[in-house]
Length: 113
Image (cartoon, rainbow, N blue to C red; front, top):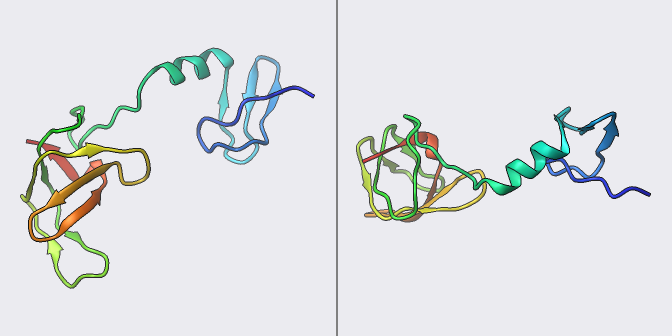
């Protein structure tokens, strides 16, 4: 049996080959082996709401009031966050916010300061 690659979009193992393309039946993503090699070589690039590339240690500003799960208070617009750390996952920024402690943020709700 052939050893087919997992889907790069949803990580499904049920991919199949159709001509020169690999196809995922779960998310309908199609790719070639060449494009898979290119995506593996590039790093995961995290961008802020304006399209600026974020790096570890950057300072960012919150662009929207964010409700904190499990708390009655929220993080206000304009709050500065220093020394962010980029991580993989849905919430791609780990940071500490004064008055709230350790938090995970989505990059779409911040802008680079």
